[in-house]
Amino acid sequence: MIVCVCHRVSDRDIAREARAGCGSFEELQDELRVGTGCGACLDHAQATFSQHCAGRHGACATTCHAWPAGQAPHQRDVQRATTPIAVMAVA
Image (cartoon, rainbow, N blue to C red; front, side, top):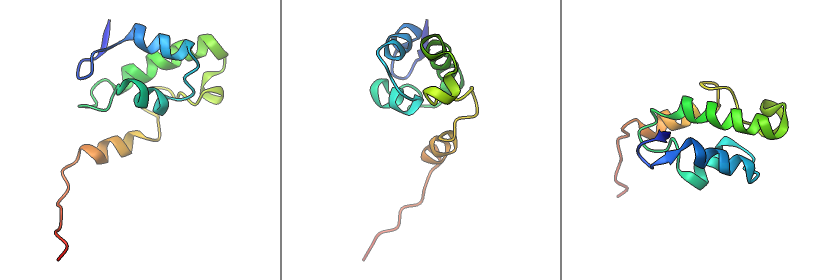
């Protein structure tokens, strides 16, 4: 099933990266770009990663830093990055 429409990332892609040893959700985003477009898939992508990472480690939240959906500390950064910012010219 497609999780991230913006970058055509499926649950199988996320599972493959988790099995390959992806250490964090941020690393997953670097590899697959999941959740870096519109951001609508973040919760589902994090939950999918956590599920597959937990299968690999058991206690995922402390072992591979995949936080439960909606609780990743980087979400505010994603929101900030998608908020329009006024750019000032330097003279």
